Length: 395
Image (cartoon, rainbow, N blue to C red; front, side, top):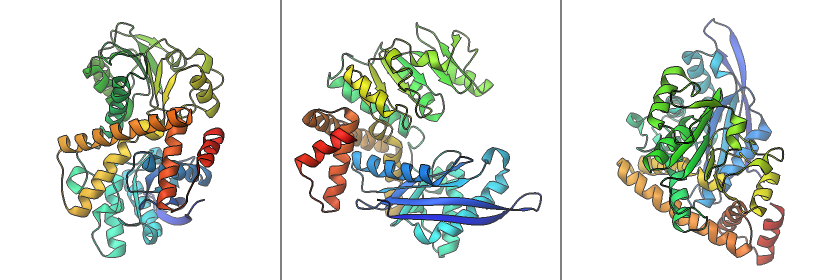
């Protein structure tokens, strides 16, 4: 059950002098384990049901990796692509003035999400300071480095996913001896996907295909990832990269490979294509890339799926580190951040796998059961073995 939902409307002066009324949301799902935590997205399709679901997802994710935060989410209905930077800033500050009474470093800590970034987080922190007449850098995470941000934040999601993958391979749970030389396919070449491609390439993996919203490329002998990244920066897309053959996102998902990494959209593996998936292991860097029914089929077929609430939790973990640094007025080096990240990812990967084995369920349900047990412990609600079996059956 959601703790609090705030729906706000607020006026913003546009560059042409006109006034537009915007609608926004902040949903606080659960704070049994610590302050609410979750991003703010700017998107034309933002709606209350979506924000509710994402807030609950954050409650699960923070509990899976055992950081002392709860779950929240927010968003403003807008099209940031059609707005100037000044309009975005005025809109952001207007939204903050509405939600300021329910956020703060000990209450609710927003972060970047779709179409928001470090600059937007700085505006939020500044405006919150004006509203409360106090400086509180810990009110948001994902800020610029020169404004209380953390080292390692840009790579955190991809690096966390890599740590999980390497830990599972090391435990010999799947038939992949090491990452070196293994074929990797990555759908999505945004921040998380491109950085994961580079990290996997540096580990000696053979990244044979990558894609973005405009197309996909393939080289069965392995792509030169630094060249692909440079091509993407220059052209704005991966298609037509030298040394690769153009293909489609649909074909990319169904390629034979050791490791498939959906790092873009939700619901890309469904009942329509699940029986054509040939990967031995799937690492969910995106949120919700598999439908529930497709996930069940892959589990029955013996394909390991590393769930999003674990695989892409590196971002929220380093956000937690940023918050801790802000509260203590400290600044950690990148090496220290990455070591702490690896320790948390490895520990909780093992616990997710142990929970899944104990209840004879998929890693996804193992992660959910682990998260629910941790939340119930803080809420002082006792759950029996029968309760967990029930969760495993119906989640």
